[in-house]
Image (cartoon, rainbow, N blue to C red; front, side, top):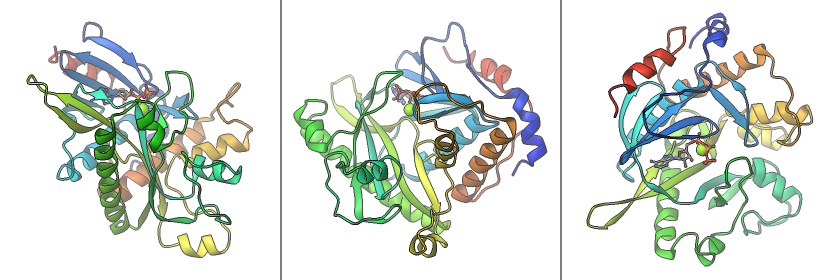
Length: 320
Ligand SMILES: Nc1ncnc2c1ncn2[C@@H]1O[C@H](COP(=O)(O)OP(=O)(O)OP(=O)(O)O)[C@@H](O)[C@H]1O
Ligand SMILES: [Mg+2]
């Protein structure tokens, strides 16, 4: 763990936007700056923090933690499905194969939390799935569910869509969607088992898949984007879960829900002007991410203090 005072020092060096002139076509995501270089994609993880699809601030070391955590999971899950990773030239950067991203966020849930709980509470189905009446917040589902969402254009929110609609609307061809769902469930089961070994519950997560076409036109499904990070997943502490659930208390969380809750308490859910994020809170968020990183991987997070921008620009000079 990087000590609190060192994290506070890093506030001055967080990575906002990253410009690498001449590298290739740029797409600026909410969290990552992406460059397409031939058949490869360079994903540079900034320290930007987004919630409710809005970028709010930067968090010390966040980009590095996310890249390293995704790297851990890509490696761990490579026996289940091939992934897009080619190499890591810097702790904030991954070079991947450019794939045709399937335009659906593949969300898998094992507990009633987050937007699924908000939908359920409001009497709505969850991506077309009607859950039994009388369920409680944070309750475990009978088995993991896939609740897809469309990948919205930049600036708008993703919307839930049923699995049937994914196919009937022509977004994804039926057999490919079946392959995606099977892989997503296998990944989720594996991730849950690993998380359990670390005393954590994998609550829900979002996967992105893509299709890689070879010269001969053969298409292969790959796991893309990021995998099982705190930005794409919820993790709760396992040992206190049942007791807290029985007492009607929220589980202890290790994820971004902490940030969402802070915002909701201040009346913000993605519309209007977000509240100003105090530095102390930015340090708290960094500590949370670090704690999760260390619990999940079982290894210590370390980093020097200072701006990673120059080093990133330097290593990317080699990528052309
Ligand atoms: N191997 C890949 N090939 C092509 N695109 C990829 C690959 N891996 C990830 N992506 C895309 O790169 C972008 C990563 O950016 P980021 O997650 O920061 O942005 P985002 O705001 O989530 O973007 P979006 O809302 O468009 O998904 C996403 O659009 C993601 O779908
Ligand atoms: Mg994304």
